[in-house]
Length: 148
Image (cartoon, rainbow, N blue to C red; front, top):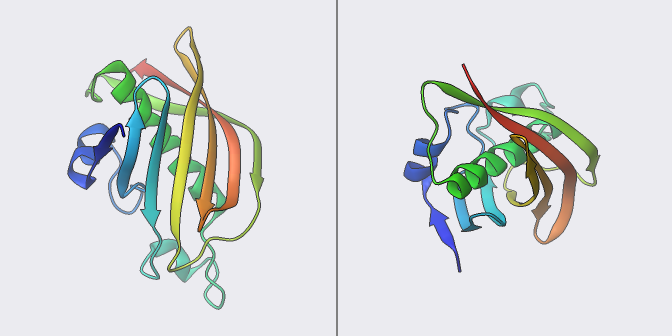
């Protein structure tokens, strides 16, 4: 088993805060390879008031954003650093994004992200999201760390 992270350590590695912090815990992280993170989805999520009030569904773009946040945690752990005030970790692309089933209140989403490459400062990852062991979303992400 690799590194685990609670919310306090996650807050040290991601600049996101409520309501945009979408990772609650890291279950396993092997720097340079992969990460397994989770989000507990509750009815109290601010997006459920408008998406959709009579049938709450977590927006797909937020599932992708959560994958990108897990990827950022993996990258910072791989580099052995934390974000600084002088740089920003940008999510720069998604390829082959697919949504297989909806995510709603009461679901626990498990994000599995693995590094595919890091060339010229562009990180590429393969990512999936699962609920109860069933695929809910997948895609190939790209991100980069840039000076402000």
